[in-house]
Every structure is written in C-alpha cells, then in structure tokens.
Image (cartoon, rainbow, N blue to C red):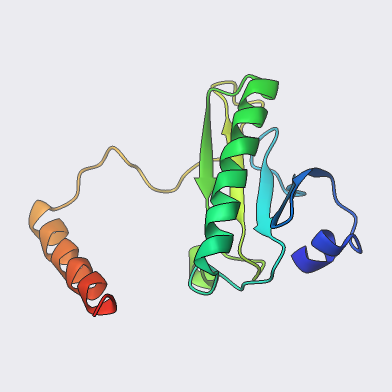
Length: 141
C-alpha cells in the first residue's frame, strides 16, 4: 500500500516529499495532524531498512514534526515505529508515525496502555541491560 502511495497510484494527502522519503497523512489518525513518513525504497521493517534510508526518514520526520507542531499548536509530538505484528505493525513497509499531542483531548485520541511512571524492578533492568549490551557487542565483532 505505501509503495502505491509513493508511486502516486494510491490516493493520499502528501505533505512533504524528497528524493528519499515521502510524508503523508494517516487515514486512521490518533490525533489531529497524525502523519506517516516512509522511505521511497521499500523495506519491510526496522530490521531491514538500510541505514541511509533510516537516517533520511528520521530527519524528514523531525522536519514534519516541527512543522505540524507549529501549524497546529501541538503541546508535544510522539514518533512511533512498530516492528512486527506483535508490536502492532499492520503495514509491512517501514514507517514512522508522527503524532502531534495535545492537552485538548478533543484533538488527541491516543491513549497508551503502558504507564511510564510505574518503576520497574532494578535488578531485572540491570540483568536485561547486560544481555542487550552483550548482544550489541557480539554484532560488532
């Protein structure tokens, strides 16, 4: 579907485009001004996207986030990527959601299931962090 939007074969409301990326409005918005930024070159997800495309998408997301926040008077912005069906990915073309956030809940319908203010178990966090650190180190060798 997103390849069709990039090609112009699927209708969309494009808001920005350059040689590498395309930004367009989300048709199932979580808030007023919710949009998506995709690489023009297809990559299934975060694990597949080449570093140069990931960089370009991230920088484009920053540009459109600033523009959207200014245009709509947003109180904040979330960038969201879902990688894999169990992480809520529903379109298998890498994309970043740019979601303007508002204190006015009439403009902002996004509700998180996770409570960021609830602390985790410090010992478990340290153990998991060590495992991730070892996995990162093994990728570099």
